[in-house]
Image (cartoon, rainbow, N blue to C red; front, side):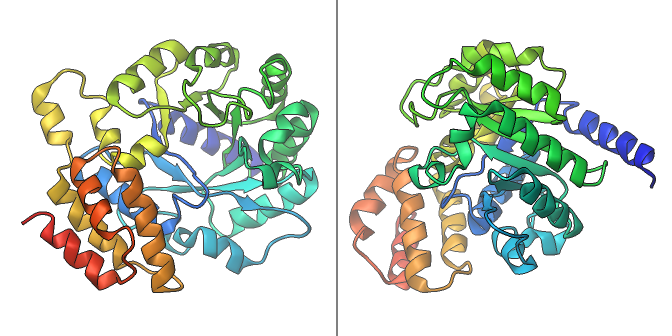
Length: 340
């Protein structure tokens, strides 16, 4: 395809992606890794409301174009048409501060099969921010513009480029400048975590502040503090957008994506509810997944189980019984016993 045809193809892709309310699984460093993505997207598909897509954990860009094995490590789905086993597309997220270097890495990611490039301006981690990455760049709207625009120019015209931001770094005083940078950059859509970096993950999320970004001529996706279907409805109303990205709430209640749009329909809610017995099967699959060592796999599972205690009373009972256990087989046995 020539450039004009690629541009038309991208526009068609975006229209198709946002033809209906979008439901996304959020990128969460150290949490939604490939194994967790596989499990959570499979659950959503089994419940009849698959995620429209998910976004990878950020791949950090510092000094050079990363080798292919790094991209495959973070996004092994690239080897399978950039989709999880159940067919959920995975968009690749980059984090960095040097526009040309970000552009070069984005171009290579596209060569490897990334269907879209997302740029991280939201990570609040101190170690990331101290190296001029993530949310600290919200204080540099011009740099944000340069990065997004450089990536847009570097990847093929049919590959969408998106950005994820917070409302600001220490406060919201730069929101107008941030909105202007996004508007001029060529981004195809924008995801907003409705808190500043300083506010971290402490409730509440300020969904209403997303409203002003709806003036942009691109889709806006709301994110932050969505733990229940009621939160989702309130978020969409206050933010003025029907598109949602689900994060920690989707880990504590893996059926959240299916329950969001059920309203008060009891039959729909029942069909969209993941019982503990059903979830046990997926937890065992997680424990049978791939990791460098069993110690790492068990540690990752315990991280998930600790979060599940916020969504399932059975998880709290299990957590109390195995939180010091290191043997995977013993944990699997305890899981099986929890549904007998």
